[in-house]
Image (cartoon, rainbow, N blue to C red; front, side):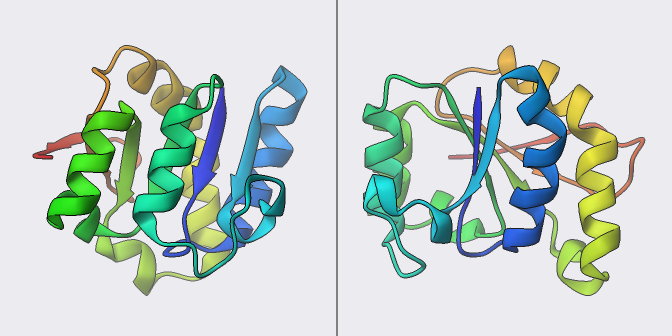
Length: 139
């Protein structure tokens, strides 16, 4: 399983999670560090969604961008790609980066188990509350 962080998230989140999951044969990558996929920080959402959906590897997306599910082109690409993902709650933007990263690490085992059973094309809001479930978001 691979985890993709888009440009609406900090590269620190990807690096921190990668340090945890690499040991288990997984990877976490940020869009800015994926030149091998043809990505850069300014890669349009439709492009990375389409590319990850066509990749034979399993990708889980973590984004801070609620617009993916509201923009017609991005929403259509998401559904076609069959990706699954989490949208960070707005409160992640209000907390120090180290605290946000610690919440991701704390919640990762439950996130991984939960998203593995989710339907393709689904999205869930990821709260900073460590005891909260995952809120389904309409795509």
